[in-house]
Structures are given as C-alpha cells and as structure tokens.
Image 1 (cartoon, rainbow, N blue to C red):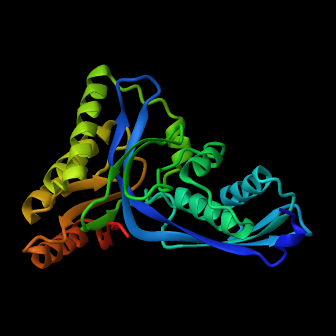
Image 2: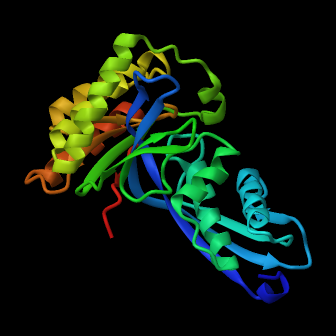
Image 3: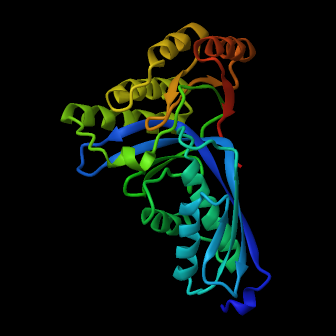
Length: 295
C-alpha cells in the first residue's frame, strides 16, 4: 500500500474512559501489578488524515505528544513513510483517573488504522502502547483484568449491567507515569488478599453480583490508602452506607472517588438524589457517570 494511494484517506476512532478501577494491586506472582477496569460512557475521539508529502505527524491539541508518537509508530509499523494530521477531542479530564491518556492512545490507533485500511486488534494496540507508557485496558470491550505496567491483558471478565456513579474530585492532577515508577512493595499477605479479591470480582462480574462488586471496590480503595491516600474516603464509605450505595470506587492513581448505584434499584431516584446532595456538601460539587454497556 503506497502513500500515494492514500492521498484522500482519513479515519476516526473512539475509546471509552474509566472511573478509576474496581480493583488495583499486585498478585502473588512476581511482576504482577494489575487492575480491573470500570469503563464508563465517556470517551476520547481521534480523527487522522494522511499527508503523503510529510514524514511527521502534527497533533491538535499540541500537548497530545503521546498520541502523536503512537500515530508515527503505527505508520512505520505498517511500512508507511508518510505523516498526517491528528486531531483529538475528549470528554475525559486529564490527571484525574479517567484513563484519559489511554483512551486518547487507543482512539488514535483506531483512527490511524481507519486511514490506512487496517483494523488494529487489541494485541497490536497493546504492543504500540507498551513503548509509550503504562496503560489501562480500554482497548478491550467490557471489564478486564489488566497488567497496566506491562500493558498486557490478564483476563476478560465480561460486561456490567448499568451502574450509575456519583463522583467527587479531591482536586489537583496526578502523573500516572511517575506514580507507576514508584516501588509499591506489597507484602505477601496483601498479595494473597488481592488474589482473593480478583477471584471474587471475576465471579461477580460474570454473575452480575453488584453487591460483591461494590464490596471489592470499597476494600481495594481502603487497601490503596497507604499508596495514594484519599482524604475523603472514610466520609465516602459512610455515605455509601447511609445512601444504600453498592460501594465506593476510586482512582487508585488519581483524584476521584465515587458512589455506585444499580440502575435497576427500585429506590434509584431517591438514592442518587441523596448521594448527589451529600457529595456536594462533602466536596463542593458532584457529577454522574454511567458505566459503558455492551453494544
């Protein structure tokens, strides 16, 4: 496939973000840092237009350097010496724990693929992303257990029924790459507990046991306090109990926390309204996210 044949070609791609992680820690096996994704119905979108007369990629906004790097890597991987123009738009704020960077990169790979006539599978996207930074598993549909530091799938767990998350933000931004460089030093007891929690949440996603999913998410948030403490976690756990939430989910390497509610709860409207009010009182503001459902 020559660059000349692709003069007018362009492509678009999208990828969802996440609301932190249902679970994040390390397993008994060595080099086994992992997370379990919580995909939400907000996304990043990329548009890529080939420029056969150039050998570099320009990107808008200009600060999306990682996405530009991935686009150039993908073009070279497929034997194309041309460049292009990459434009990204996103519904995901940066540095909060919404997997915004991972969503940008996956959307970019899909957009470049559309422009050059290939359909990159998740394994190819993993390979490209692994050269750039630790990543969430948003190249896969549904909930996955993912080795985020190695950028490799651990297991596909399935899809969640609709869940609403009432979120708050403790403020600031976190550099995920820098955070993942820090040694975590999990004890063997902690690793055994993470092994157990992964087994529980895996079974719960398959069976649709939202109560168990909420309990795992809350426990994971508590275990993460020694690594990235959340000042409002104790208050959010209390709110989960008083509002009847499934549990508390956090961005383990971010700044957001949320209360989870099943959309089919017969007291859904009352519970979510009470949670939004309580979260505004606690944090000054709140918002609603919804989980991504199977298409």
